[in-house]
Length: 68
Image (cartoon, rainbow, N blue to C red):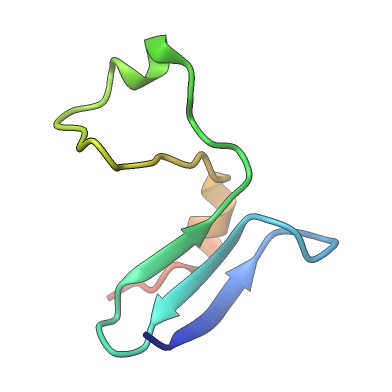
């Protein structure tokens, strides 16, 4: 897998950051605020045993996420 840096709203090189998987066009999200609160997780649908959820700022997506 080859990752291409898309953008970040971090001022010091930390999270959050978006990457594109070059071969597929899929998006990888890097963040340091993992969603772990059981009440929050209970609101999610069809959660797989090995799935993880990361909260990222909306402005990261609106500024850098591909429109296509």
